[in-house]
Length: 317
Image (cartoon, rainbow, N blue to C red; front, side, top):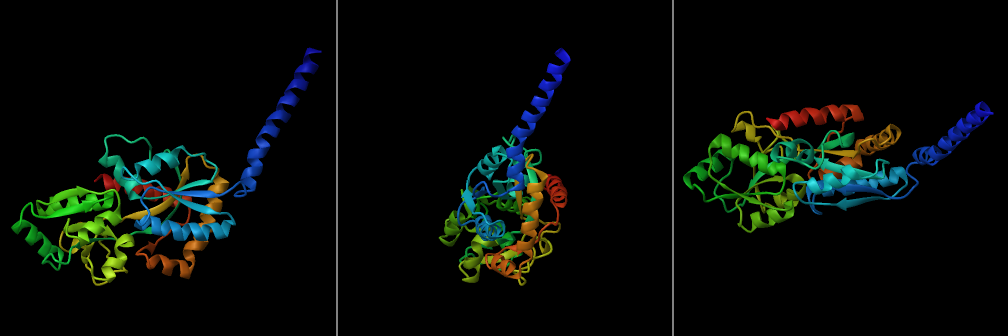
């Protein structure tokens, strides 16, 4: 009787376990029918990443036939948004569009973080590159990087630069270090605030993302002296790389989409496949170019994971 009861119990337990797992399996098979998807952005509305996120969110929602809502959680150099996304349920309904700020630079700029850029996230795809340029207030009598260096040396402690993100800060500090300049850092919460003060001459120098500064550059309200990527930028073909003046200077601000760690592989691959279609669309590429963004996707989640690790090591230096 004991053997019979025990076997009966085991069968019942197995059936119960399968029944309990069924809703989860059905949810994954039916993804994304459980409700809207949230795309967390760790920067303010109006920033370059925000502009890209809104284009991608709209198209992804159309592909998945589900609303994709952009959720701006700005502050602390992208740490607030990163912490929120890392703790979200790993079911595909919370995604994270971020940049090298949270995943390449922060581990080396802060003594401690409440998230791990590798262990706490599942890479989905790199979306592309948000080019940055060294820009100045047009009133400043300089036309190129070398003239800015010469002016700053002739007027020590008279210039200040804005820094709302890691790329702006690391790029400006690298220029300062290599050229031995004495200019003052002014922290900002968002790119639009820094640009406003640059145009108002509260600061004179700013390494700005083209996403937030594009209209100001085209309207000649700010002047571009150099781009941060050594390969230059297709969006500013007449602006030379900073590396032409400061040998070895090369910073690329990448943008990508992650999910929380342990998100099911099937869900990650589904989102990746839809993003590949979106990012190949000529109209989408033109629309993103219009906000100062260059599409440059990785093909697989594994390829993006490798890139993230390489960039983490590069930014350490």
